[in-house]
Length: 252
Image (cartoon, rainbow, N blue to C red; front, side, top):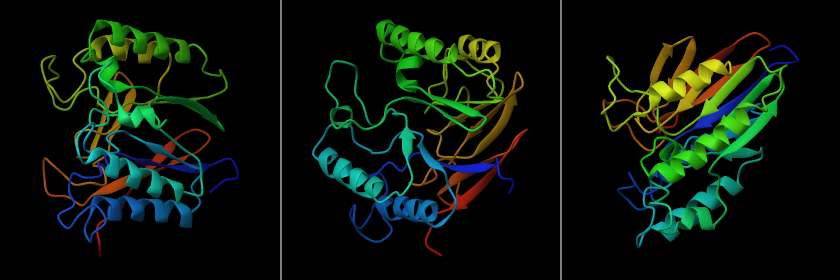
């Protein structure tokens, strides 16, 4: 690997509490798989971690506090910085309160590392699922951040929990992608976005639309739509390109 190249990990949908048949701290738990991803990061030359949303399973019920405690405990073991966005499982409607947000856990971010600039956004708000006011707030945040991308960054990534779409032909009435994807892709194309990283689907997707790579990762909790190993992604960024490697977190 050249001196200017670096790697980061994209870990999405650990969804602590979703798939833990022996308890949140038991064998085969979501925590166990998430901790394997963290151990891999710590044992390898990874510059930072990006969380893709749905870090926990329950936004506000009797399980939420324990899920958040475990999330914070696992993240505290990381020896590199981490950033992240929120998914639909961390938050209820705006104004309804949010234990995840109250703990100061990541919702959005903007960072520059080498020749990469990355913007993380709150996908549930951007897709207008929480109403026009909150959509506009997220849209304003996104457009502001896009206008500040350093000119020298030739790799321009977006992280958002929801993928722009999940099947072809692209439909505006699905509930898994972004119904307002046409407006969003116009904005991304105008600002030279090169890649969008997403979760939510619990499956891998590698597509290209309007010259932009769309990469969705299966997540570390479990697969939903087809039988596959839970996993996360390691992205290596070079001067003039990048590569994506899938790392499984299942036992054995």
